[in-house]
Image 1: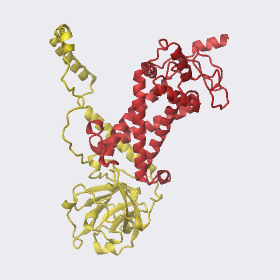
Image 2 (image 1 turned 90 degrees about the horizontal axis):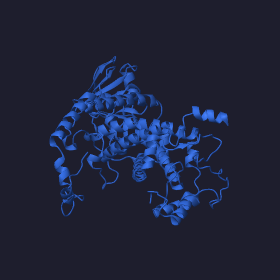
Image 3 (image 1 turned 30 degrees about the horizontal axis):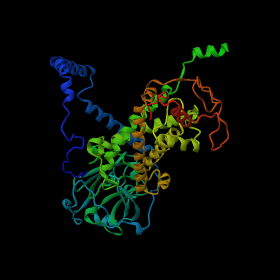
Image 4 (image 1 turned 30 degrees about the vertical axis):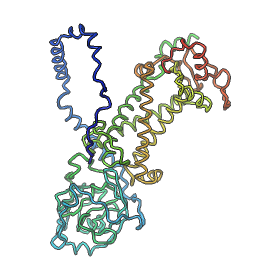
Length: 265
Length: 265
């Protein structure tokens, strides 16, 4: 997104010795014959013509509508393509990048760490037991580790080693309605996002607390973040404070700005 | 004899480029331009080569999110149209008729003719060996683009296919090089079509009437240009009677340089 500004250089298309005026001189009579009023009149009727077609000043909006509709259609197409039990490729620990790459909608120096002692995971929606969870309680849950590729929508990727509680097991434990459509997240930095239930139940979807077997560092989502092997990077919210199981579409921070919602990989 | 006449009266005359093919050509052209323009914007978000950024005015979609929407719209059009084209080309025999055979000797002779700006394309209904090679080449590149694009989009769901491209970044590189090949083809293709406007016109109106095609005869010329069937021998020497346009045109050019009338030199 950062394009460097380059200094203006003289156009290579600009003639070195100015514009050749001889053509004008030769056709002076013809140029004089051009009726300025006729041109104006023609221009006005051309404008009227565009109004007649009805398409139009809002062309930009209608294009946006089409693109949005196709993006929603792509959500459905990806849901159909999704293989619930197909595992993402995994890697050996020596391929793991340490530390991982920071990414958020702001720079790393603007990141506000979360206090793990006062932090709680709030639960909402179609969940039987909505009691909030402390970090200590989450640490006591069985831990699963995945070494998978993190793919960013921008095009870069790295291999990371994440561990935490399997989301499916956690949803089972809290009595979530697994037939609901979405699992939505809210974060300490006002980021928000949601994923489809099928991806939430994938064997390689975790609520991660550790990176490379160490407690997760602040920039990468301490104390709790989502890490799923079947979604692009921005579908993995960090610094999670609340989780909701719902049939209401909640969108997401980047999704509401035009990025595709399903964004499965 | 009378039957044949009756038939030909009922039948619409066959054109060099039937309507279905022309429609597919222009649908492909539009989809390709959308994919290239939006692809450049997506590339800019995470460049492969530090020295290469595509200027904003050359790209499609405001920001990467808009560009991705365009890309994910046009990819369906390109893929569906491409599948239709392959099925059409294979079932009607058009590929066999127009693109085969490719003989090394012809390629060499015509390559030489092309480089000395003496390559002729007087008979629109026959592609010369260089054209055949390029058209087959660009079809193959198109297939590689669809496959590498699928791998970049779905490296996990299509992990079996992704293995063919080694990893995500090599798939991105292949996708980029495929784009470069298509753009290079496009430049030559459009330049030649503008140099020989009859070819451009033929892709709009259908071009010359050709003999009705029966799948039995593989290689076929236009009505007025009755040719003996090609010899099945794979001789590297161009057989007598078998036409080699380049060689023929070279002879004609040297014999009557003012009569050949080809604008393609």
